[in-house]
Amino acid sequence: MRNAAPFVRRAVSLTPLIDVIFLLLLFFMLSSTFSSFGEIELSQAIAGAAAPGTPTERVFVQLGAKRLVLNGAPVTLDELVARVETGQVLVSLDGDASAQRMVDLLVRLRGRDGLTVILLE
Image (cartoon, rainbow, N blue to C red; front, top):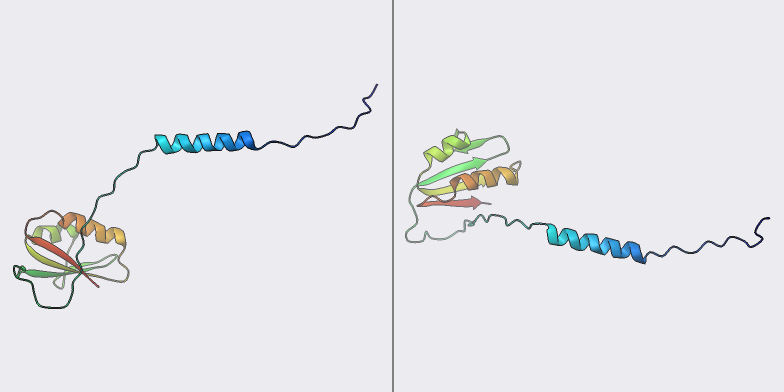
């Protein structure tokens, strides 16, 4: 004999699914590590008189996506680091220079006593 009562489909409750999603979110938030990013100090060149104690040795660097020029002569990044010891480094960025290339240059020149790096607009 066949059951004469019609089959009634019950609505699916989404509450357990939402609970599982929140538990997964909580798990991933608590188990992840938040890395601290290094800080690179930048100073912007401004017009005006030179401050007392400003180094007199200045080199001009042009940085592009594929080129690196030190005082008009093409160099590699290693040669630039070897040539520049103290003074001021004025960095002019080409339109095609990437942020990663600029950071690579700044990281290599960072931490030297008597060396100041200034990014030009």
